[in-house]
Picture 1 (tube, one colour):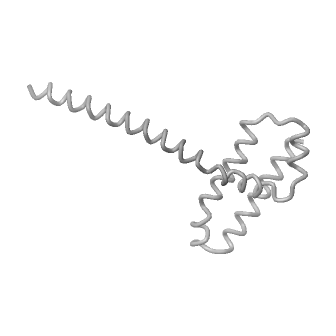
Picture 2 (spheres, rainbow, N blue to C red):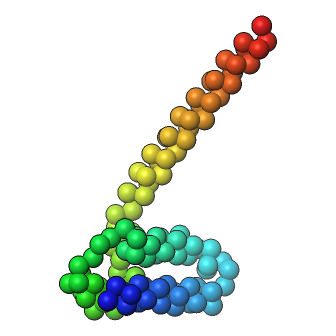
Picture 3 (cartoon, helix red, strand yellow):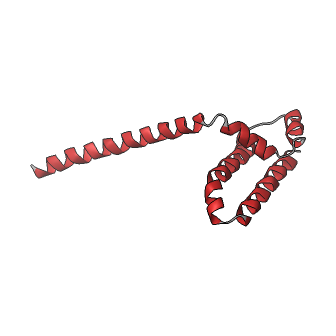
Length: 111
């Protein structure tokens, strides 16, 4: 049953990509974010969740499941910004620390 769910989601994604391609490059660029998130949703379900048979059956019973999952996710979009901010903060800290160490090293070498 899990395979059916993954196949359903992959087929919905494939159909979505085909529709986007038909509308041209500008439209595709506008939809890149949505495509990325939808792929992340598929990956999340496939690799990060242990779904019960009931949950799988419930998901399989929905038409346009991927769109529904995306629409639900988009209403919680703040989470992605928080994750990006956390990542950027950590990267800035690492880069600043490396910069400070290099500056100290350069001063010592100059003496």
